[in-house]
Length: 226
Length: 226
DNA sequence: CTCGTCTCATCGTCAGACAATCTCCCGAGG
DNA sequence: CCTCGGGAGATTGTCTGACGATGAGACGAG
Image 1 (cartoon, protein in one colour):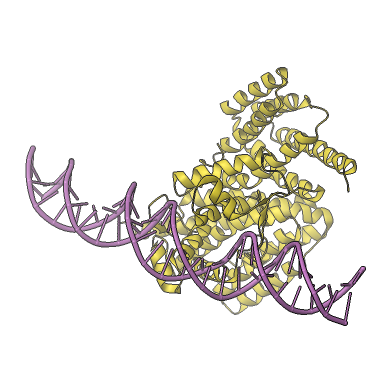
Image 2 (cartoon, helix red, strand yellow; image 1 turned 90 degrees about the vertical axis):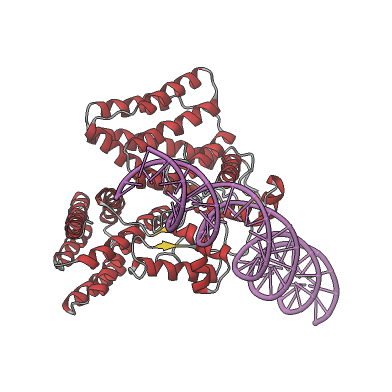
């Protein structure tokens, strides 16, 4: 859903490798702080080191890995500053998208579907599915704007957002059920052509999400500081 | 100025290669429509093909080249749709930046310096210098927000913006002198803490720029259609 | 206990190779 | 004359194997 969108990789093997490693990072299978050497990827997937290298570079560009020259790539642990910055950027994208969609009164079908998926996941208490559907919801709005560049740059934050939710999941105590309700308000504003309202609802929704994540991160840090 | 900012390349050689090819594309030395094979880069710069490949992939990610699997990379020729989309994305970034800076009443020194450089370039009728200073001005505002992710995603449009101005230069008839005046209005709004005003001035400025570019592109196309 | 040196792991880059795929020209057929 | 396949060349995707450069941690000297 995210990669095939705009900048598709050079080939299927490279793409498959990328997708696999990406999902392993996002799902937390490879934990934050863990080191990923080129050799390890090469061995794990039976590919040559240059292929693994390209994969790591791609992930680094999306913020799912951090590294500098001659140093091993590591999965980043997002701190408060990262999360604040990430949500600031995200808010810029998504509020703009909401505005645009409200202007055109376009409610994408994909968003409605994702919304339904969220609701059923909440009923089933399937937290993972809820996260996936939530991300799909936001992607649906972005893609509905039909701006290749917007979709492309959103990909650069989407991965980190997913990472954040993975960390969030690891430490969660409460499952917010307000998400679906806020989404509904956003869709309604778009449907009504209420541009300012759509912007505002979206901003409010994201700020709430940010604050929940921040609270969890701080709580987790107090719990196991040293 | 653009690359060393956030996601720096793995090494100096790779970086130097990237910068060189980038500037050649942006300056129009490598014209839109021209094909760039990996071998050509490798030969031109005496590097191995994998190194050249990595460079092309990086440029592709920034929109300065287009290619799909097994096909040679080409410098894109931006059409009306591209330009409209590009300026839409750019407006999102820069209006957000202007808003933020106005909120903090922060006028970055770098922006003032770039502004002075524009004015002197206009006086000297040095069009190239004016373009460079203009891009520096906008980068200064973005960077002053002090959001790593904003700077990072701006890099993805900055290259294309520069490309656009290169194409614009090739066909230009008039040199707009309104740029400096509009910049001054933006800085004033920021200084006054007028968030809405800063947003609006910025949006107006960019829409004007977009329309000038669009007009040039359409004129050029009528001039040499087949 | 601190600091400098030294070894090892890892990365950056290269050369050369092979298969898969694409492009383009050129001839066969309508 | 134009259209449609087919084949040769060009280009890319990936591999193997290698070498020097750089960073990180251990180890010993002071």
